[in-house]
Length: 419
Length: 220
Image (cartoon, rainbow over all chains, first blue to last red; front, side, top):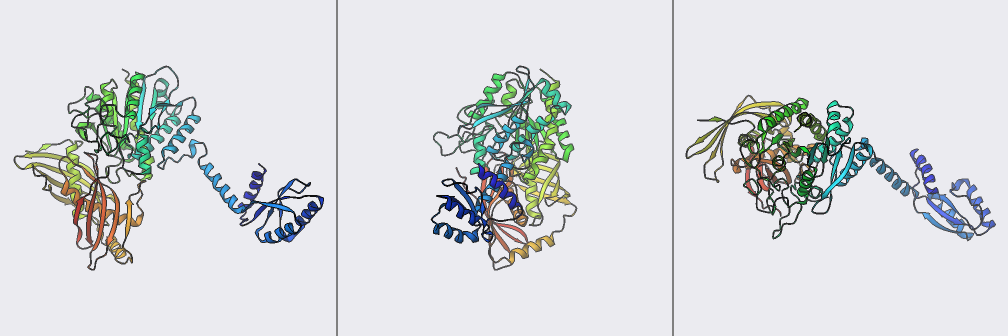
């Protein structure tokens, strides 16, 4: 539209601090040559400072005239007294300019480039989903987005697939945000997905991993809960499914897995934060992952990321005795937390879930472990309680940065220890 | 006889959190909050007919000045059976805590000279932000919550202050400052978020007192 070109000029002028407050643009249609001549005369009146956007050329064809605010009465009287018909096309030029400027800055912000995404802020679900599409666009030969199911409230469950080819390669699964209030995890997920994309072809370990394995990364594992933490209750943990016969909503997605389901390490009360659900895999968010991992058949590692407590955990949560691979998992955890601490001195403890925090049944990694995924780990990210779930956004990048070497340790070990 | 407890063990970390909360209550102020830097050693003793006793060696840090640390030994006794008796906590600090008289007095005078009672909510906010002028209000809640945590802890709980939902100053004619807080406590073991009301009194020379507190019902 021609308007846009004129606006470009006006914006440039506005850049020189010229304001157009109250100026109007009149659309004038001259009836005959006499009126055209009159309009030209009007244009020549230096003191009026009118500005033709579209010159009056021939009768019947509209011309557009920008009139500075102080000249409006004089111009309108002139037109009316000569019976030249006009209409007000733009009521206030400055208003329109301001609006336009705002839109331009907005679109600069949502400009489609991963280099402008603010990793040091917490984001909404829409922002994260938009960014995911940008990431895929930027790395079309490495990353694709798949949908593994839908949440209770019908939000898509998206997984980023990192793959350099092959067919059903051995895979590593990562998830963040299964407990929606643990905002540092979704934020770390976004940063880490970006990091993996950046480092392929640069970092030897990442390259080696992706040259023979695939990575599946679900960043917003509990989208309904996450949306609820933004809209209503920042400290919401569970899903948002309705519980029959109860006013209380939601199931703890990390007590809903079919591993020791229904024991003392979860609750039968729908109002509880650790409510296990009516039956194992009742939650569509959980079932989607179960189906995916079963269907894939070649997942070698599952790393489920939570906060807070600064711990690296492995099975079991539903019973106290050591898992069959306790020694190996323990050694790997020890190395990973040591490399994590090397970055900023952040201290993690490690061990089985049952020993290190509490008995918990129906957890993600107990199920994956009992279903053939040997390298099953849970991270509990920063901090240890000073801010807890409300971790300041200034700690997002440090947290993600220090966790990265620990993740890499696990993934490299998985690569080097095929089974 | 007391047996070593692995430092990563859940029971040890709960006892350490309780001891820290108690300590913070006894020694904290709007200018000084104490947090657990690390657990150095933990031993546990089952005392027949009495309860479970933990012997702890802790390193604490000043939340406003992370490099300021102090070592501490503590004994925590969880009483058998009687859930209405708070655990018994005793501690010994090795070394001096930073003097906070100046900061405390500045805060005291600032609040005393307010025309309208202070009111605030959601500290920290959703993004973890605490406005600098609210930091002493926040620390005061941190200190006072140490009392609530101490009074309500068992071997099966691990409480932390999650957020101040609401705080309102109550003007007094005497020298004390009084604040009415609605806080959210997070229990790591049950994962519950528990609203708790507490009335807090403070004076720079008289320390922090919780004169009233009550657990609030959870929303659906």
